[in-house]
Length: 319
Image 1 (cartoon, one colour):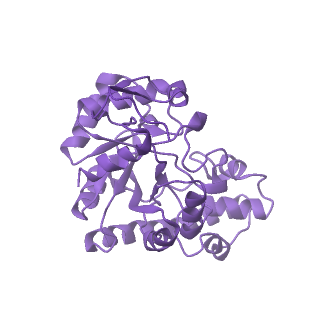
Image 2 (image 1 turned 90 degrees about the vertical axis):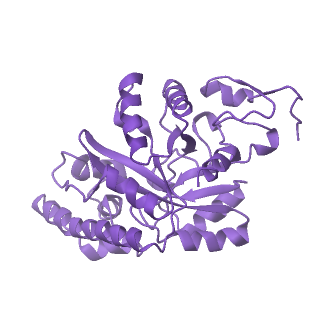
């Protein structure tokens, strides 16, 4: 292992290729960067399993993480915490730390905003009741999609969709899998483009929480609300973005997902500067879904970048 210098620790060259360069005085914490080489243990704080719309089971995701030398992952399935206990049990034997997580799609005035939650109590009554409401909405969505598909001369059944969801929360990716299996679409993307995306003939709006309510639920269950992949807000004006994030912070936001598979170097720097200025936690993850999102590798951002364990330590300090 390479020892850091006594005065300055420089982020490795590969990391600088995609993200801004910094020289960090020894013993100083700067969000998102390496303090010591030994801290550069891989983590991934945005991971999905087949309990929502991933393709690997919680156990398979954990075993993959262990095989890749990843020290910690957060299981952040959509609108459910059902896979956390299974992942944690596997993590104990595989030597991988499992952070209890969640991703919630919320409604705001300009569209959809995604909120990540970390360290919630998965047995919290308020949380469970809210997730049951969202699960019921997802379940009611499936027959509506199937009926719209039928109007397009596409015949699939609810049973086939639920079989794809393997006991988890059914969603459009499961419908897309069935469409591919029955040769109504060539690929998952083709299924979405042809039938399931917004504006396509079988699209049905899903049940969502107001964004403040989502953060309130996460906080009330002992968790930390984090703004997921802020590039999806389509707001690159630094002043407008800061005004919006300050409002979220006033309603309980604790962090920003600065490092993300689809963020450009410029966006990453924008979000890092914003998080630092507002004293928000910096998080990062790949949004791994298995084969449902080809090209996204567990634990590695574009250009093969890794995320340091210090990100997770800083998040824990917010509890």
